[in-house]
Image 1 (cartoon, one colour):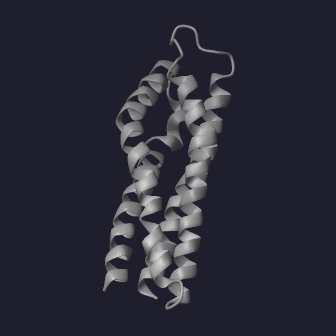
Image 2 (spheres, helix red, strand yellow):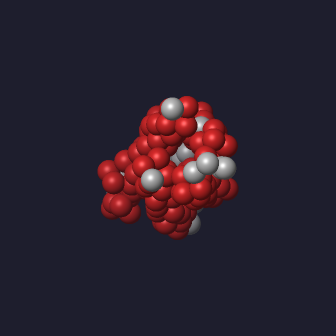
Length: 152
């Protein structure tokens, strides 16, 4: 029963994290290149304000919530262990992409003045979008693997 509790707790937190990756991609990221620069900057500022604080707390908590499931399933349920470990790896990959690539790009973008954009602003926007796809994939595949680990 303890294992099932931790699996459920981890699934809920991971679904929230994965949803925070997938939602903006579904709603905005696929069309960011269609927005005028001022609109793009306003959207980026708002998304950063709305998501940064929550994700700074939620993402590590989601990853840490995987550890009890890994510990409890290691000897007794190898399928659960390996699926959960693979899901953990997907979310960890998404976190690394976030910290090493995406956040530094966003920090540059939010410092820009709309009247004096750098010449490479569109390339940075597109780089962010391309790497965001890795986060979305990591979240969706990771959540699927965690759910499979809880079921099988």
